[in-house]
Image (cartoon, rainbow, N blue to C red; front, side, top):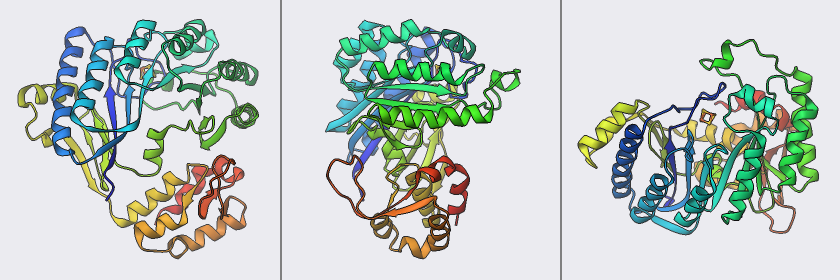
Length: 392
Ligand code: SF4
């Protein structure tokens, strides 16, 4: 059983809610924020005692807006994790920041505390589009934040961009992408906007790009980023060679991860659960009970059956451009992948959506790996509809 583990820390605070957002995030005052970090500190201690035999390979502070609270709170939280857990010397330690709150001094303090990767939520570099999304920053603030991050010493930066925004044209989207590439970040995540039920956008009369424009944005993203040295390693993620996000790869490759903080999800040794999403319950529990048995604030436990593990192995692994490792499947499940999925694999190889690659080389720069089953380019384009066939 692998001793490796990743840690996700949820910071649920935002200065203001964006109109499309369905993440677990909200505004809060100083007192609420202080008590949250106090509770989080207790959870860290409790988790470290439980997982003291593990080695932490990646840490990710996400939200919400981790750059919104006072920088010291975030840095002290990272220091507590480093003090309590065994941390791998190569540990990737990322933090999500928003341009409106990531001022230079805060970025410097993040770097000093040990964060070595920054993810900046730009979304668009068009000020009208940003306003319509309800974002607090403008494109100039974003560029300043990026430059400040470089000055603060961050050599590994992701920029998030979104396509299919209200009133967005293909040319305005490409202008955003062009400006982002000009900054030469190491990593770019490019998602298209999804209108979620329960968000203000859901009830608004929005003029969204039609399907053809949406598809054109998707295809142009692939073409443009490839042309500029970003290899696509997951459906929506692009990186310079060697700069893929190790933390996200843990999710896609079904590694162990521990979620700390409000609503955070965990999966360790094929058992899945999540923390309560109720703020008061979470905070009061830890403030009153300290590090004592914390099952009362964990819920949705599920021990994954072998069938669910195989399904997840396929669903998540096929999101990666490298696909799934045929030998790894055999080692994990003591079964041949073709014995379990022969029919569906055959169907999609014949239709040109899947391919079996025997000497796959992720960066086309050397080291060879064993046989992989992966989506072809055409398969990745329609992967959502194909995935359902991998349910057993
Ligand atoms: S900053 Fe991110 S988490 Fe916060 S409201 Fe906007 S989209 Fe949601």
